[in-house]
Amino acid sequence: MMTELFVDAARVARKDLLIEWRTRVTINQVIPLGLLIEVVFAFAFDANRSLLEQGAPGLFWVGVLFAGTLVVQRSFTVEGPDGITDALRLSGFRPGAMFLGKAAAIFVELVVLEVALLVGVVVLFDVGLSDPLLLVATTVIGTAGFALTGAIYGALSLGVRVRETLLPLLLIPVVAPILLGGSRALEAAFGISTQPGWNWVGLLTVITGVYAAIGLVAFGPLMEES
Image (cartoon, rainbow, N blue to C red; front, side, top):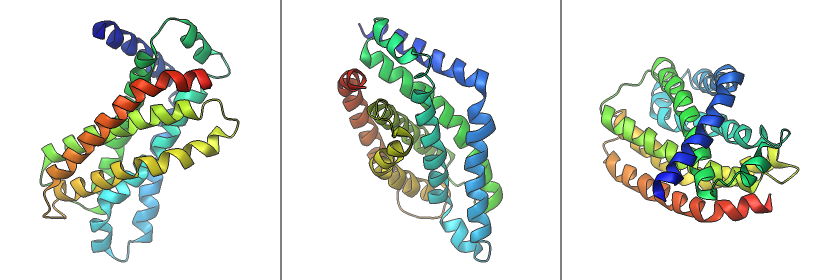
């Protein structure tokens, strides 16, 4: 049962990633948007470099939030005109597999985005790195939580006419704990704060687990409603 679930999830993720690979939206539009956000903040706080350095973790996650919302939105809206969503529902894929596959594809696209944003943080904000393992753990777990949450709320807004504006209103408040925990953990990873960053990673892990459980249970009814 579990093996079939993950196999089907991998198929859904592969389909989404192939669509992205052919359209190059993440590379051509989403990543430039995230970097542009960082550049704007770099110019805005250029007169106070210490403040810019201290705010680098939060600004990184702000870039992930706004650019990542576009990734989530596109993951669902791109399938509507061609009826792919309805085809998936009729194909026999279990809702849990569709949920995990969608979240996995969003996760991969966000990781590509975050690599570019981390390079931008180092270059523009002049921050150092004191704990690489903490950095990796924070970004991986935080990104997983963001992707799982995005898959839930992307399905929730799928059948709404104003989903382009509704999705950010729904998603941003819910992922705020992830952004908070991720920012605090990155402060420790960059050596900005002396607080134990791994405590925040533990919090991110709990949040990610909760969103995974909610998505596995609720994704089917959400897709039916859409």
